[in-house]
Amino acid sequence: MNKKILIIGGVVFLVVILAVFFALKKSKTSFTLEESGGASAQALLNEAKNLQAKGDLQGVKVSYQRLVNDFPNSGDVTNWQKKIDDINIKLLFSPALTPKSVIYVIKPGDTLDKISREFKTTPELIKKSNNLSSDIIHSGRKIKIWPLPFSILVDKSQNILILKTDEEIIKTYTVATGKDNSTPAGNFKITSKLVNPTWFKTGAVIPPGSPENVLGTRWMGIDKPSYGIHGTTEPQTLGSQVTQGCVRMSNPDAEELYTIVPIGTEVVIVD
Image (cartoon, rainbow, N blue to C red):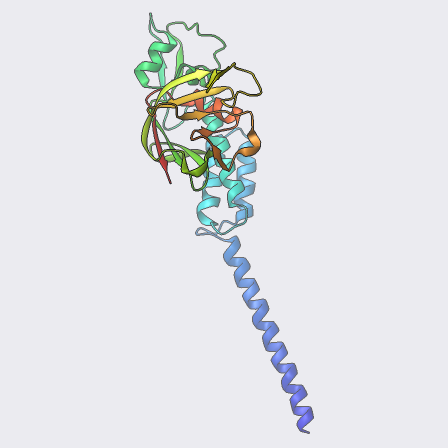
C-alpha cells in the first residue's frame, strides 16, 4: 500500500514539475519575443526587410534601433548594431536628405574647398554624398551638406574607435593601439591629413605602396607630434595592442574615416 502511494506521489510530482517547466518556457518565449507595443523581434526584422526592399534606409535604421533597444540581451545585438553602422555610412555617403543634413545651393565662385571650409566638412564627403565625379561644380545646383561636427573616441582597453556626431554613434571600428600603453590618452585634434603617406622610419624613408610602409593608405595626424590615426599593411593585428603608439585601422576603414572627418576634428583617447 505504501509503495503504491509513493508511486502515485512520484507521478503527481513529475506532472507538477513538467507543468511548471512548460509554463516558464512559454512565459520566457513571450517575454523574449514581445516588446512594449506587442511587436516581436521577428516582426521588426520583417519590417526592416520590407523597408530595405523599398529603399527606405532611414526606416530600416529605426527598425534595427528598436531591436537593439528592446532586445538588449539577444545574441543578435552585435549584428543589429553593425547593420545600424552600415546604414549610417550609406546615408552619409548618399544624396538622400536626412534629419541632420541640409541642402545648399551652389553660388557663383564657390569651390568644394570653399564650401567645405564654410561648413567645416571635407571636399571628399561633399563629393561622395552628391555622386560628384570631379571637383568641378556649377552654380545653381543643389547639393547635400553635413553641417554638424564629428568627433572621435578611441578606447584603448577595447581597441575600438567610435565615430560620433551630435552625441550619436555613427560607426564603431576595430583598431590596433600601442603596446605597453604607448598610445597617449587625452584630448587631441586632427591637424594633418595625407593620402598615401610616406613613412619616415628611423634611418629609412619608406615610400607609399611599399609592403613595409605600416601607415597604409591614409594618415590623420593629431596635435601630438609623430602620433596619428592611419591605415595598415598588417590588418591581422587589428584588435590588439601592438603599435608604436599610433591608432591603426584597416585601409578601407582609414579611407572611409579620412573622407568624413576634417582637420580640427576632436579626438579623445581613453585608457
